[in-house]
Image 1 (cartoon, one colour):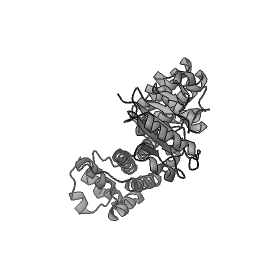
Image 2 (cartoon, one colour; image 1 turned 180 degrees about the vertical axis):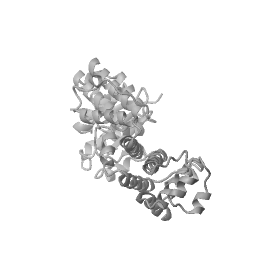
Image 3 (cartoon, helix red, strand yellow; image 1 turned 60 degrees about the horizontal axis):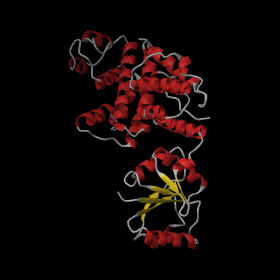
Length: 379
């Protein structure tokens, strides 16, 4: 197994006029013939020209990001995954203080050696204090939770040195939202989730979410409104994850409930519709003849019926459909042809669904907010 030396530099450090850097690099290459040398460049701008002469002997790994502890760990994992082995060394000679801290955490987690070019030191000698380590571990767990990566958050949590009492509360909290996100609802013991010592208070949003769960079970206008809002919130989370096909699925579900709820206000049940009932509403014969008694109306037909009832929701849906924005069609495309909608397409359908929901219930944005998940923040 060959030794890999990774020399970290970020744009806080200027090596453009640093002869020592050039001398160190040439000496390292000549002394270590069997060693792979990598330069890990973070947000480098001014140093590119100076590094060009080293391209033939040193492999360069670029990270075009500014240092940010909330994202840099995952970038390290991605950029260094094919380089890191048990003999890897991370060199901090040309790293800024911020990069030194981030790489120390990364090296500690991966049991790597870190050093300076002249004074080699092991990770054990640079180990963070127990409190610092716990703090950074908590930040990693929170970051995964905020990205809706619950399994990953739980794995990090179980491996962490976070206080047992805090760890258990945070575990219960994550599991609750993991189930909620999969539409598996239960009402938790709030005392087992709240008062996380090192996390900023999110009790208000947690209680909103629990209240929403109670509303989902009700078969009335408010209950249906909360279910519509929950699907819209869920779609928004999928959009954040760039899971656009799943987002369309949730938006279609919201669209279906909107139509069902509005039809109910006319005393029409989409599952048991009959022709006589439609005659009473003066629906045109050609539409009546297109259905059979006790047909289950497809969503497109539900909205068509609403438009024939001179209902604003139905009219809006038909306007969007006639302009080429038919969410039912794009959903069918996603399922039957594995069509992958773009971010822009999904944003359009998100806004259309929200507009239809607002026509049904002007308070729907409040419900969407109440069904949205809290974002954790470490104190």
